[in-house]
Length: 244
Image 1 (cartoon, rainbow, N blue to C red):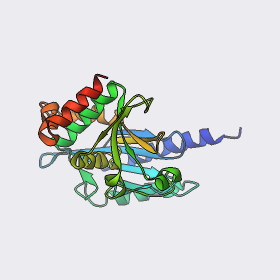
Image 2: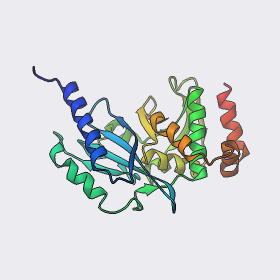
Image 3: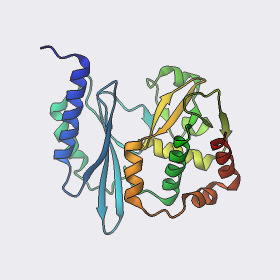
């Protein structure tokens, strides 16, 4: 029986996940992963816990095409198209030839965890954050790179209704918060969805952030952290939107 493209994609992604499991150092675990429904991409959240550093995280991307984000904090392995999975074990082993203290690994700060809590709270109420991309980047649909340190930081930021941008489009101008969004998006803790009006919606990667927040367990009051980092006015505007 001839396999269709959907079956080939699923078989390939399953092979990628199992290869990652087998090739990880014994001190590193595959904490969570998510797969693309349109291509061969597999995103993995890797975890290591040490007495010196506590929770250490790494985002590993394996795909059949280059990453469209520039300055993203993740390790990306491009297997080419069609995907060459034969060389994947060697490529993964090479990633871990040095330890997880490399520049692509990260520890979650209280400020970053508070933003994740805020994003999750917004999502539960049908709201998401979005950035308005330049027309040339938006219409290229991932065929033109998005620089998280330049293009993203120059974009307008909005809090909007997840399913209907016409119902709410509240602008926010606060660079330090926008920088956190860019950082979390670059770690795949947020995933993107193209929308109307050149908007790129940023949705929490639930299968990652929920267990991550449980694992960290160090933030006592995320609302107070948000107020401390971004001010009372920012927090109250978010609450206003949640009540609309």
